Image (cartoon, rainbow, N blue to C red):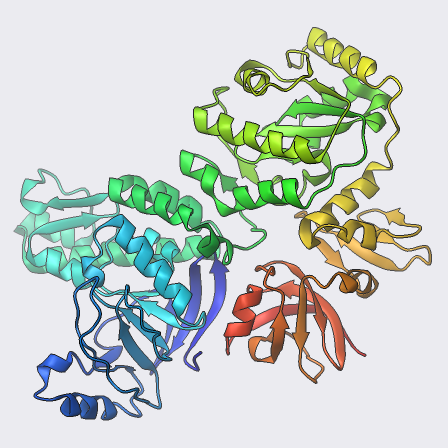
Length: 580
């Protein structure tokens, strides 16, 4: 909890913020000794009291004041515990990553022994473990760790502040860095860069000073690229590309994906950017696993006798694609008697009603027609779980190639038509559907099914029943009650925006509610004004604001747990608010 650091933007654990020192620093950032003053190790003093006095002397410093610390080996507890000190200014505290002690309050935490975190398992455990211990509105600084090759991964892990110490040390050791790795400068026949410092080395020879300057410039350039990736909500894609530089970085990403709770608590419910599922690690993305979990756990399929399994399409939403338009024409009026489920990688299952929800309408994947073992296992596992919850009398599978074989191998009893979009294929589809839909029950209006599905998807089970109770009028992308009062609208990115009347219908469920104090907020709701928040809330969620004097709706800017633990930052962008 800090007065000097505020998170402004989030993309998973990666964050952009501002650190208020003598001059404001926009994070993620590279800092230097000009930005902080450190009391250093206690072993540089003749006594503990002298070290404490040195820490007290930093009181009122406008730079980041790093208090005296007790050095320790990577997995050892510090031999001593110093008394808490107050700096009355920006406070920095060195913490050991695997210490069991609860760290005292600070504005910036310095990751002790950071340069020793060479093992990917240690690196992930240290950063994720420490971020879970410290306040969400405190910054994390990892000294002597950053390179152009690993900077994206470090920021994605959750590190806010880094430095150029390793770049300068490697320059002195004759090491040449780029975002593609590090080489001995003496082994390079040609320098793969044309920065000013490399041009000087080409003309005047390699020197430690020029190597340091080049390395620092490459690190600064990479920082700008990473900041833009966070800003454009594409840091994950950036990291998946960049970790291929070194096996230990790829290992670190895979280990991080196993820390599902750490990632999911920080991952927004939607992004403006497209998900590019270009590698095997994409199957483990939080957006992918969360979508599948909600389809299986929250979503309830309409009561239908017939299930139609279809392949995905390159164009999103699927309904706009040529192939799905042809499928719809082949099925014809019988479409009102069956339920459609699209099979795809990496999302596994996309009910037709949720094809515009994030990330179903915002992903792309390399299409080869080949399904590897991991994709098959993920798809068939999700399909099996889905069919245990949602029962159908008959199943028609219009699939082909390895996708059809994967479903057949799962043991699903269905009418397999062989897939395809040519004339004979569409005839087979039409005939199979006609046979299956004989005596099937007609489904409600697809538009109402979409709203019901989205309400359950975003607000949990039974939310659709609560929101659509009574007579409902569909007008464009908005639903209204019988008095023509708006209840909710369906945004172009697949989210739902509640009206005040819609929020009142969902309020009794007790979910996605942010409780505030005895005041009527104006503008945005700040974290200090939050009394209680649903732990399920994630950045981008539609939330209901409830207080003694206020009732409203808005869009969450941080997770519910973060609203409770933060003393700075915007918690909710309010859209409608009124006095009770």
